[in-house]
Length: 165
Image 1 (cartoon, rainbow, N blue to C red):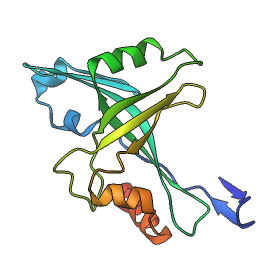
Image 2 (cartoon, rainbow, N blue to C red):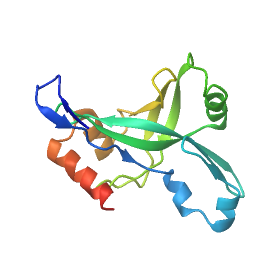
Image 3 (cartoon, rainbow, N blue to C red):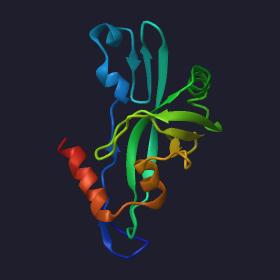
């Protein structure tokens, strides 16, 4: 969709969001684990033999330096059972707002995700899916890029990588 940008007055076309259809752990499940798990477009429950993991779909917005557009990601975070249940119970409650602790559960090209990244999950049902913000004190190249921005060229390269993945 093309439009005139209010920031610079130029004609723009929105970048597509980089969206993941499932949390990373879901992609590695055995057939038996898949049968015991469930996933929708907004929630995922993985039932392993020794534990159950809970995930919700969220939005992460990456600032793009010297650009009027930001790069959006549709990603998944894991929540505690208590937070997950509260989120599900209030899913249709437009007045529900809260903040949860969660762990980022998708891997992005060009980053090593040996350890998951801690995040704040900000829920405001009036605006749609929750937004996440990586814990600023967590030392990781992705967290650094999140808080310092990336170049327009880097954003476009990431989009092309995912589209052609």
